[in-house]
Image (cartoon, rainbow, N blue to C red; front, side, top):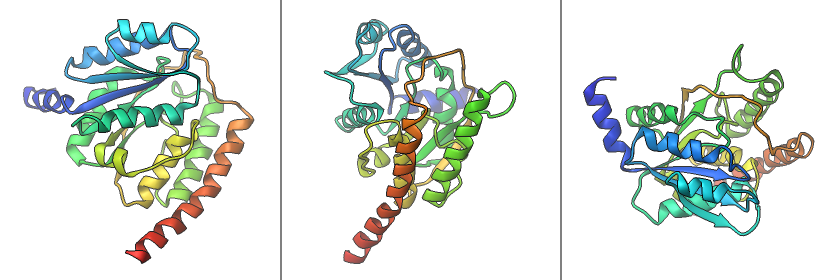
Length: 246
């Protein structure tokens, strides 16, 4: 990386918040926070502790993050919205979300910010590899199917719609409203953003799979996801109705 590029990134970091939704991630969240801080001390790092019963809040605070807590577990979608509200209380211009379990390498933050600077897109998605050495086989199947359904609903091909490692511009955070409380919120953001005319691009990232615990229910979550896809058709009608009344 040349000096000019590094200087541009460092300047951009001053306007970026790193948002880490966390639930019972006490063993890993501290390392994630320290990894993000190692990228640049200029980054603002916020951990939303979603009603954890372990040491998540303490580990995050000791690593240097600002911790916002929920009194009980209300889901990733709600945790994201809490972080979004936090961003809008500042003058920061973008937000990067990444998981607390160590699956996302904070070292990829420069790739997302660099892509944002180059394109000025509203959303930059960190796209994971699906081939050998990437996702486990079951996740390849579910991710491919989910991304296809989200792409059809959004009207735009999105290679990895389920990646929680993404950059959102302040405009998206402010204008795209979601209602999903769980993991469906990430798909809802993309569908609503594309429908609203926001630009979405991607950048390749590495992903670490090391037996982390997943809180996605193998039966319940697909049903909730399908319900979300059905709702997306009504969102389109809502948008057309708002345009006609302007």
